[in-house]
Length: 217
Ligand code: MHO
Image (cartoon, rainbow, N blue to C red; front, side, top):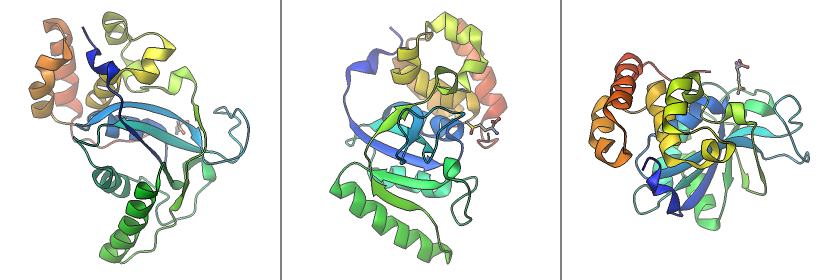
C-alpha cells in the first residue's frame, strides 16, 4: 500500500533556507529521508501562522534514517540550495538557519560552515542554534508542489492533514513532481512505491518535464 514505510522512526534535522516549499521538495526525494514537514521555528512567538509568524523562520523539518543518509550529506544539500539569504541579510522569515537536535549535529554544522565558507571564499550569515520548538505550517503549505496535482492527491488518498505532514510517499512525490530527483531514481524506487500504471505514467510525464529545472518559490 502506498506510504508503507510510515512506521520507520529516524532522526530529525531542521533547516531554514528560504521559502520552505523548495526545501520540502529538495529533501523529499533524497534517499534516506523518511518524511518532511514544513513549518515555523527558531523564534519565540507562540502559535505562529503564515501571515503572522513573528520572529520565526520558515523551516523544513526532516526525519531521516542515519544508516542511509548522513547529517553531513543533508548539510551539503543545505549549503548548496539557498536561493538567497546565505550571504545577504534577509528578513527572518527566509533566513539561513540550522536548528541542531543534539551535540553531534551542532559540531558537524559548525565544522561544515567553516569548510564551506573557506572553499567558497565567502562569509555566510547562517545562524546555528539549538532546536526548541517546531510549529507545522498550515495544510496548504505541506507538499505544496504535490497539491498542485489534485488528481494525484485524490487517487493516492493523500488528502488528510496528517498524511500531508507525515507520509513518506507524499514527501517523495512532492519532490519528484517538482523536478527534484531524476527519472532514473524514480524508476529504481518504483517497485517500493505501490503505484499503479496510470499514476506511474502521470508522474513520469511531470518528472521528465521538470527534472533539473531548479526549485523555486
Ligand atoms: N513568493 C511566495 C513565497 C511563499 S512562501 C511559502 C509567495 O507566493 O507567497 O514563503
